[in-house]
Length: 234
Ligand code: UTP
Image 1 (cartoon, rainbow, N blue to C red):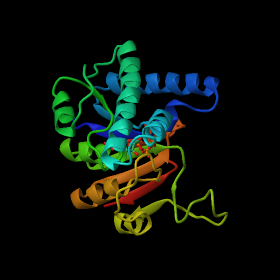
Image 2: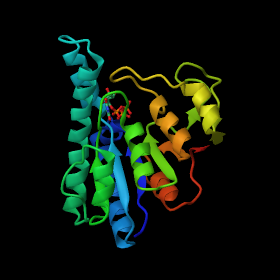
Image 3: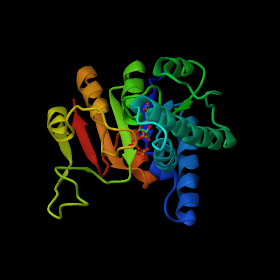
Image 4: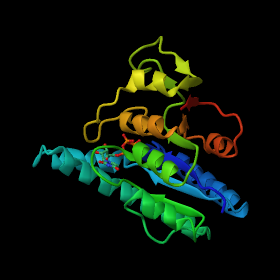
């Protein structure tokens, strides 16, 4: 069986500022899916929660401060977004798993019958980056692509520091020194979830970080070609 590839799609990618960009992005995603299906390749897509996750978590904070409960709200949003992507792929006739799996082992099993598996979060305590790395492990994939809304991993936050420098190639230990290994709080943003980095280090999975607003970059990374972004070697 062809080994599946795995990508984490940040939830913010589903809702760009302008609706025209959204149509173009979804159109290109459909074309990419048809290209993958046409080549009998397999792809696991782990979708983030984006705006609905943050809104839901903020609402729930009025009633609870329990981190796991707030994470559950975020997980529900990731599954909503995963369902949108799943339905789009079904619409273009792709062989997509009929359900949104709630754990990565079930997701990996779906590849016996299907070319695409789309899922969101699993359990509290991490983000969909960690789910994607875990799915890569369960599918015996060596790499995990993280498509987000920044072009690279930087040595410091580029929104706060003008002299932030992008990494093109780095080791997983260098990444750990930037992210740390602490659990993020519900809805907290980070270029890569520290828990995902720890899992990648433990299972020797390489991470590719790229700007998912550019579907061409995703395609290049999936095709094993050079792409504009950061490669993290485990
Ligand atoms: P995301 O995976 O969307 O966080 O999960 P993110 O990567 O920071 O955001 P985007 O998608 O790139 O914008 C959203 C929230 O859902 C909960 C966490 O609270 C997380 O912050 N979550 C998600 C979990 O608790 N477990 C999961 O497996 C996934």
